[in-house]
Length: 139
Image (cartoon, rainbow, N blue to C red; front, side):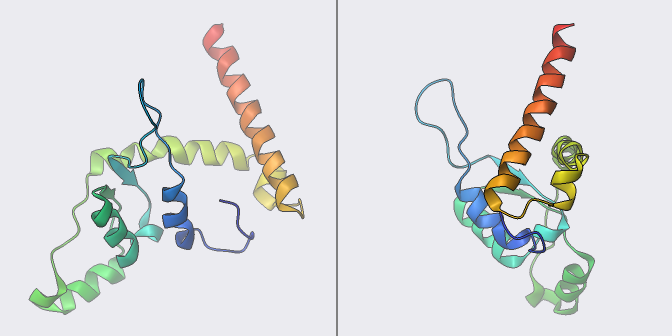
């Protein structure tokens, strides 16, 4: 989902999750992943509740202030958030891809004024990364 350059990513969490399609060898694509790994910016109560309703495992660490507020409430604060550290480490693959995309100045600084031209630049940069990856695996 393309937003304004100064907009935060977290409010787009649920709309982006709604667009996910996981292709399977046979049948329709799945719309519900087994787990979602995200950083602390996505650890809001609303995002976690949405994942829980859909039966998706949340691999999101808890922010320190959220943990402190929960502990301050005592037994009324609920249980601590579970966190699969091994699965969270796999998020690194996505982060590296985003860093490769942002290595291109046009994507990082968002010079393009229209959403269409920015998205075209993003697709172009992703294609360049993909072709570079293909040439490495062939050789």
